[in-house]
Image 1 (cartoon, one colour):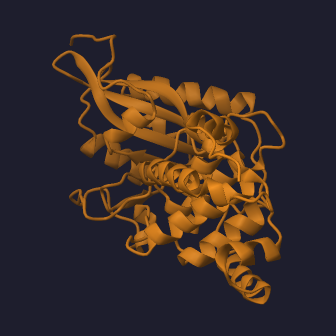
Image 2 (cartoon, one colour):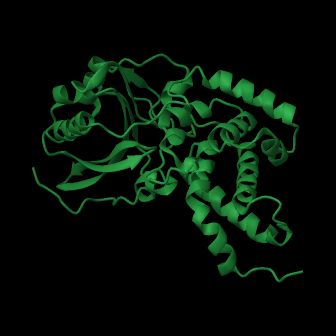
Image 3 (cartoon, one colour):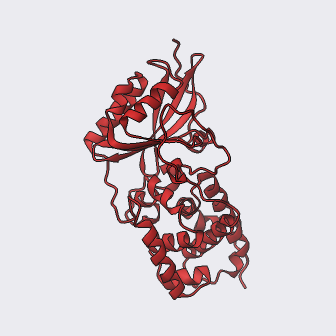
Length: 329
């Protein structure tokens, strides 16, 4: 029997897969915080079990099996992570009071840089933008954990049914049956796994510039002109969601704490393979972290904005709590 590899030797082989494993755990969990914890758990389990790794599968496949098992164990004691639109309530009147619910384990965005979505390697299918889109992650949350695992392993990672069956300790027939049910439920949601994600067009990039300028100039009319007629705005941990430019306009006008031009600053970032911004609010002459906004286009207009008010996400995205650039009123 060979000696157990040193920590350095094991990490040299396994560490390059860390981002794709994080993307996998994120698809399963809907939380970047949970995904980071479970990647750590995966590496710890793998380190402890490496003596028994006989090379019958690739190291990558072996690590994915461990990660999937860790996710399924974690999901035994955790609820699904919805967006407000996934709670089943109708759209909210913008004049209604904001209702915050910190007991709901809300869906979280994931930075592209952590999930590898900025990769240009066509072979890196497991970190592709198609498979971490916000709408798709929200849809996966509606699947029971084992359906979620089977669908991700088969349709994202392109594993064979027999490989999935071995990983989940079940039969190939059971895997095929589970996959059929999962696909049927997911087919009711758009976008699907089969929809391509195209690079932003020049007009879409121009629209993003207009979006930033409108917010920073507190031009609410200018903001809502960029939305589709059925656009949706939602902002966990607030349970309401708002549909249509008129409702979004009234929401921003009456609920946003900004009072005029210069009160908001938007810093570009990228999340879930989509354009995103970190929004900062000026308080006492200092721009402090406020929310992270993930934007979805339909053609050349915005069809969805998810504005996330979880402050710990700024650290995950590598963003400062306070902007160095400040202004006074």
